[in-house]
Amino acid sequence: MPIQRFTRVYGIQDAKIAPLTADPAGGTPTYGALIDVPGIKTLEISGDVEVKKLRGDNVQLASNSSISNVQVSITHAKMSLDVLAAIIGGTVTDSGTTPAQKATWDLTADTANFPPFKLEGVTPPNGVDLVGGDVHVVLHKLTASSFPDLGFAEEDYRIASFTADADPLQANGKWISVVLNETAAAIA
Image 1: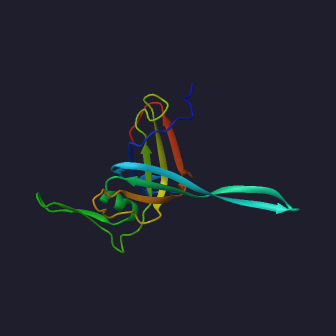
Image 2: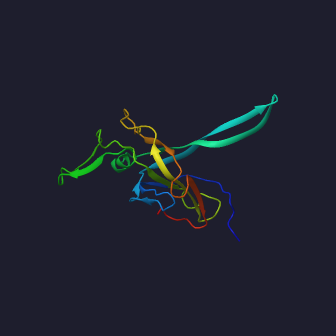
């Protein structure tokens, strides 16, 4: 018997992104290594629907709706140089030796290319109706739609965030996948 197709959704435990390295039409998309989004706080998905109405004879004769935009908004507690490089470009370099090591993210005119990436978030185990289960949400092809919120806050923590727009994959047309697992699974 299949599992139920509805659930409560409580919390978010983990999120990872992966650079989209190939998206061949009719083929198989490929992704780079997973990058942790540290201190994930929220993953919010919204969308826009465009509605066209056909009128005639002083009445509405028909209407047609289509998705015109899917957007994701992420907040996370810790700034990550690797996430910045993956979502807007740039390079991260490590230098120095202990006790003077450095990790530097540089964004230049040549490297600010807003590359496509995948995002996957997951609830904690038991964050769903199925005991021991979880929910994964996958956005298969995203592109940052604004510059990430960065900086400092006086006498407080600064929460990092970014937004991105989704596009369907050319390989298989997927935009979003929501997977309800009977047994919790790590992001892979």
